[in-house]
Length: 134
Image 1 (cartoon, rainbow, N blue to C red):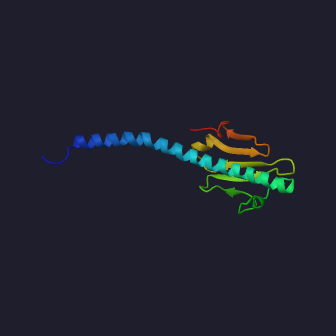
Image 2 (cartoon, rainbow, N blue to C red):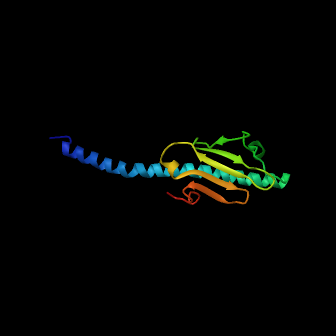
Image 3 (cartoon, helix red, strand yellow):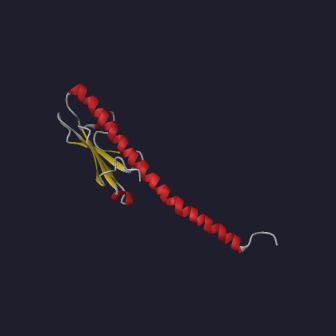
């Protein structure tokens, strides 16, 4: 009469299944928010470096090496989820864009982030990705 019964084992499996069903979606949301924060941080760093470059040269630049990045054009964020580019850089303005690279549910939420030389932030397809918490 020692050991566990089949009913006790099934109860443990049901409890673990319920915990997994709650934990996994929360984990996916956390991972998606971390990727978004990585893209936003890269764009804010570009904006800061562009302002510094403008103070010294009276123009903005599309060359990322002038902004302290190791590549001249596009670069990928640390997790490889977003590709960041600087376009339309001239004496008056610049636009930096981070584009999501994976074809999953996150692409339907926050596919692109942009920031320009006047500090205007935008995102697509949802307009609230810069402040979105879920």
